[in-house]
Image 1 (cartoon, rainbow, N blue to C red):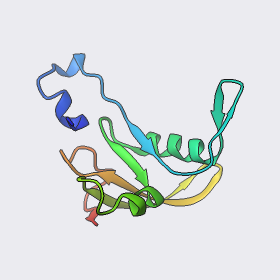
Image 2: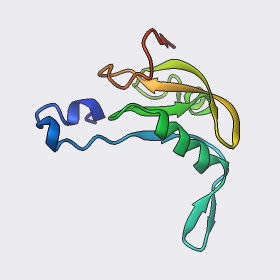
Image 3: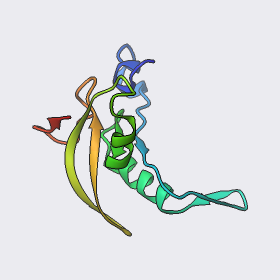
Length: 107
């Protein structure tokens, strides 16, 4: 797998496409070709908090994948998100630019 931050390493800055990814576990409702629910809403907010080229995951996702996935995520703290209670977020570590803030601790 090529990590998002390394995919564009050889691409000129004005030609790069840098995605942000938010991952959460929770209820997802599929209705008439659309999806909604807390799982979708929280993932969308985690995506908005991620740095360009980065991945933001919820604490629930981190607990379920710890020890199973070869990836490091930094605890970047609890965030107040619209519509839901505050949620603890983690950010991808590989390639450091994805970190949500400096001094985040590794777990």
